[in-house]
Each structure stands twice: as C-alpha cells, then as structure tokens.
Image (cartoon, rainbow, N blue to C red; front, top):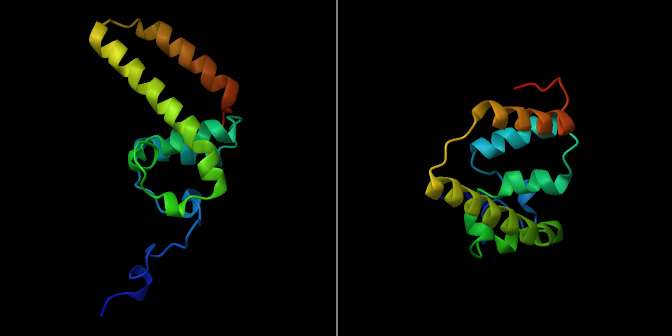
Amino acid sequence: HADQRYTKKFGCYGENVGLDACLLAWTGPEYVYQVLKRGNCSIPKEGLAMLRYYPLEPWHSGKAYRDLCSDEDRERLSGVQRFDSSRRKTLRSVTNKKRSLDLDHELKGLLEIVGKYVGPDLEW
C-alpha cells in the first residue's frame, strides 16, 4: 500500500505552506545558513534567504514549487534571482580571466565581513 501522505497533489505538504516548512536538500549553503541562523548573526533575513534559496534553481530559474510558496517566498523570489545572477556573473568573470587572487588580501576582506555580521561564538 502507498503511504497516503505522499499521494496528495503536494505530497506531504499543504498548498502555500512556504518553502521554510519544506525539507530541502542539505547543500553547503544550507549548512552555512543553518549555522548562521542558529548563531544569531546580524545578516538580514533577506540575505539569509538568498544564501539558503539560490541553490534551489528549479524554483528561482524555473517555475517549480510555486504552489508551495507563501506570500513571503513570492516577495523574496526576485532578490534571490538577482543574487544568483550576480553570483554567476562573478564566477564567469573570475573563470574567464583566470586571474590569480591574492589570498591573504581576499581572506582579510572576508574576515572583516564575517566580523561585521557574525559573532565570535559560532558553533560549527
């Protein structure tokens, strides 16, 4: 017999339940999102949403999961799309130029950003 929870139109989820209520694949960005969220970082929720949802490409680049989206998901969609577009352009730029990075300089800049938004007591 089939499990009745999964025979409905939306599987085990209700319509418009919101992506936050859905079980997502455990990607690297999802792990960092969970660490930052539990670490009470000061990154705005819109920034955390970009980190969490840009790997969900069928949602932001296609039209998948629309029936599961809440109003909040629909509002953040364009921000996630812009973030992913910018991220891809940056990756292409670095790849095409094959530029060498000054890792010490880059790390210093990243640590300044982390220091601004993330407290010293993150638990990995």
